[in-house]
Image 1 (tube, rainbow, N blue to C red):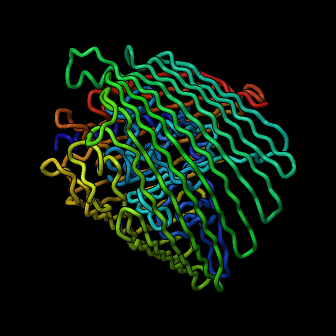
Image 2 (spheres, one colour):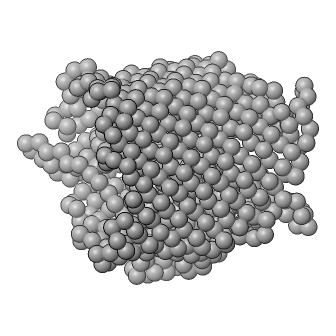
Image 3 (tube, one colour):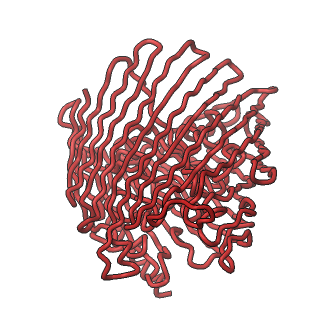
Length: 628
């Protein structure tokens, strides 16, 4: 009761503070009109369908965070920018920026309490391409920047029918920008502030006839919250396109990131007198080539991709790992009969990894801390089908994947659901879906608990959403879900075995409003109950309130209020309840130049997400954006 009162007090205090603050919110929706009713289909998304579809026409819950919302945070790290804006999504952090990897690293993602440690049950994707490092089967959080991102789509719940392993708890799909305008256009952004932090990027787009390109370069650095907690990273992203015709389009992209980070905190957790510093030097790269076709009632894509990683960690003993992944994604959307849509797809990927050195010792046969190169190959066909009935009043949807692997038995992964538009502005949808995750190399081959006989984890998810759009002035969705996981990998008697299970259930609320032409509001809330004890990175309650206000023709105010309640960190840390108030002020000097200030944690709230890592108090950044 005392904890609940404390959280309620913070909630009220935060709400009062937010009445004087404003945060950016931008929503887009489309409207479908038939002879009997009008209903909004919501933002057009591709996640959860492999085809551009209205969000309210899918039985699965997809949230979107657009480029204006990302820009309103002033944050260049993508996962930090979306954390809190999507109900039930939580990202762990540890410094002013820089997630890092390995011991003490952050950037863990959980959706509805599901994510694993490290994160390997929420799938990161870029333009539909799955991403994870091969050995531990998790993403590298610092790889994702906001500057070249058009929007982020978050599938809350299993996406394994379309996207395979690691999409057990959900999917975060990063949709990159295209060169929309003819000619050459460049944007330079730079900001500087607290803890000697500098963030900068330059993005160039070219569109000439059938050719288009986007190239983005970024460099960020900080001294960190204490001595020897510095972090710096550089990245490049390039996307080239050529339109052979209206029907055939070719795309190629390449991204490369390197970060170097130091961490003096983690060694002190076990030895307060330690002067050791963890050094991390991480390089990751990706390349892909895709061909799209568009023919009236059918469209599709074939993508070939390759990704690789090279990780050096001195902790202070030397660790080195390498991994790579090659894959082919192919699907075709068709309309087999009237008011029906189907997708037929096939995925192939093979990923490998090795650890040639760990603890300063080179690999030897029988070592439990190093491995020779291991590989897993997966190949899976899938199909989805949706059917509109009664002029779109009822939409049925179903899908099935046959998940094959050279390591694990074949699995059948189903999903199904429906959407009803019973009256003008109303939407009801429900779904059931299965998700799964294959064991990682770490779980099968590394360290004493390793077990090569592990089987995939799985989860069934049931959910229902009711939504109502009253007008541009107010719209709201409420989702209830029930997730049951089984066959989870746990360490029992010093051996990894498939014995774990959990039940997670909760409520999610999303509301949007545009009461004035110059004022927009977005709010989210989520509540999580879990049968698991001491589940880290999964708050019991979280809420977000954002307001965007064009106060003057040249002056815009963006702010957000984020509240967290009941966050478990570790046994020796109290459950965390905190409220953060952030703000961005933008002044357009001339058409080509904007000046801005970013103020985070304005109330200087103290809180912890990772054990031993105090989060920053009040921080300030100032910068400019130049278009030419």
